[in-house]
Image (cartoon, rainbow, N blue to C red; front, top):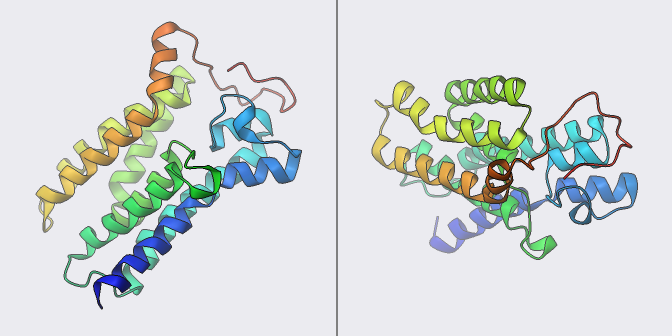
Length: 217
C-alpha cells in the first residue's frame, strides 16, 4: 500500500472522529447550537446539562464508539501502515480520530475535549488499562462531582497504568511517549476548566438535575 493510500485511510479515521455528535443531537432534539449554551463545549457533559440525561448518555456512547471503531476495526482491516506494529498502527489511527473530534472541520475546527473519543480509542487498544482508568474516573467523579477533574485525573493516570500492565510489549517506549502526549493533549483541552477549578467557579454535575433547569456554567 502506497503513501497516498495510507494518508487516505488516516483521513477516513479523522472524518469518523470528526462527526460532531453533541452538536447534531442538540440541533435535532432542541433546535439549538450547543456551542451557544451551557459551557459552550461540544461534548456529552454539556448535552447532559442542556438537553437532558438520556441524550447526554447517547452522545457519550456514540463518541466512545467512534474511537473504538477506528482502533479495534479500521486500523486492523485497512491494510494501511503494514510496516508498523499493530499497536503503533492503532495509535496512529486513534490519534487521527481524536484530532478529528477535537478539531472538527464541520464546526470551524471547534470540537469537543476528546475524553469520550479517547476512551474509545484506548479501549480498542488497551482494554484493561482503559477500564481501570474509567474506574478511576468514576471514583473521582463520585467524590468531587466534577467531570473535568475526574477526566484530568484519569488522563494523568493512564500512562502509569500502561507502564504497570503493558511495559513488556513491543515498541513500548514509543507507545508510552504517545500515551503521555495524548494525556497531555486531553489535559490541555481542559485548561479553561482548570482555571475555573482554581477560581472555585467550575460547575458540578448532579444526575438528579432536571433537564430543563438552566446550566450553571
